[in-house]
Length: 483
Ligand SMILES: Cc1cc2nc3c(=O)[nH]c(=O)nc-3n(C[C@H](O)[C@H](O)[C@H](O)COP(=O)(O)OP(=O)(O)OC[C@H]3O[C@@H](n4cnc5c(N)ncnc54)[C@H](O)[C@@H]3O)c2cc1C
Ligand SMILES: NC(=O)c1ccc[n+]([C@@H]2O[C@H](COP(=O)([O-])OP(=O)(O)OC[C@H]3O[C@@H](n4cnc5c(N)ncnc54)[C@H](OP(=O)(O)O)[C@@H]3O)[C@@H](O)[C@H]2O)c1
Image 1 (cartoon, rainbow, N blue to C red):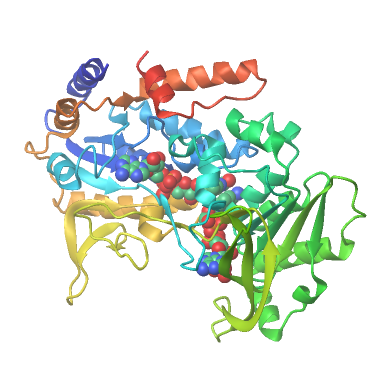
Image 2 (image 1 turned 180 degrees about the vertical axis):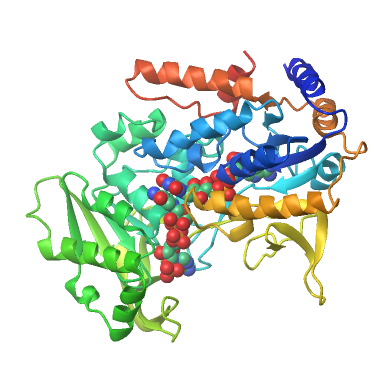
């Protein structure tokens, strides 16, 4: 299959392109990768763009992050698919930059644009973080969304009635919704069946969403908050005392409409009070002004979490909007058998790539990768660019990456204009990459192969009355891709 795919691509590129086109490889097929590819192809008729991804499936977090009950958000996949179908663009899946091919090797063949996202997690660095039952929200999300790296996560949802989610951003809200939403509703989505089965068996009745700051600073947005507050048969719990605002909070809300709206929604939910508990009714508790101090180990189940020890906080700092949570020395615990750390994602460095380990990003100016920023004049890596979460850090919605791509493509266009990136016969592009991968026995997955996976998933989904049943193991994905 690899060879067949290769010949097909080479013939396509030879027939439709100038003999010696400018070749750009986009690493990562999430929103940042696709938006950048789309803009480069539109702006530069003589450029060939290959989009490489370590997975056999394209679309990054649109497939493996966006919640199953948000199908409308995934419609952007249609736009990305049209980009892949452009004659001057190819998707080359199952190729990991940093292992299948090194970055220096890739740069010998192409000018490169890195958009490989943030595939690790911020750590709390507190005792007990390694206990069983403590997961990064990323892993939990990948598990229910069918990312093949987390197919076997198997979080235990049956030995406890309580889950604690640390963090109050939109990912935390997604995870809370999945844990609390009636499974009959989830069954109609593209949630994986292994996750649906586990959620159907789940004994979790209480979810605590724990924020180190107050309701004015909760990192979620109003639409997502409204959705979690509106889950059927869930009673909402908020302590009235946490809703008392300070003058600094009032100024913060005056300056930021989203913060005000979030605060108002939480206050409204608190004032309606928890409805009288019905037998088996689920509970969602918002806990504010608490930062995790350590995880508690179970006495009966060695190596497993039994709770979170939290320190009460107060906010300090003059920089409104950036006030920080400082511990008061007063502690309390929440007993639980499952913890999801939803405190932010983190990008991973790859060999030979300048990387700011503190910020977790590739240092750049307007998307041009900096090789040295210590001198008076910034030094750039020629022909190396960055976009998306790898460029800015792990925040922002899908559309944010569109603006981010515009900025990076403007830098690329300027460099093309200045002749920094020239068509170079020493950069063999796709042909060279495919030969190298072939010599390493790496089975590439091209867009047509992904379409086979897509068709199979839709067919399997059809049988279960859902939009798709995702193939969630590497073996299944590669098997169907090569049929
Ligand atoms: C759980 C979650 C839910 C979200 N829900 C929404 C939502 O509902 N609406 C919304 O607007 N935004 C949502 N977002 C935000 C949105 O998903 C991000 O803004 C966006 O996906 C970031 O795009 P990216 O291209 O930088 O990274 P990603 O989407 O992560 O894409 C990175 C790609 O790089 C690939 N890759 C990684 N390493 C390598 C490597 N070494 N070699 C080759 N390829 C590699 C990955 O497989 C992936 O395909 C959500 C985010 C998360 C985490
Ligand atoms: N439906 C959607 O549109 C959707 C869905 C999911 C994700 N997204 C987007 O994806 C991006 C990432 O979301 P995210 O939820 O991962 O990140 P996020 O919005 O940055 O939220 C991170 C949360 O973790 C907390 N936190 C960070 N470090 C902590 C620590 N050491 N201890 C305790 N708490 C800590 C933060 O609190 P502080 O505020 O105090 O730092 C915040 O509550 C966001 O831009 C989000 O909007 C969008």
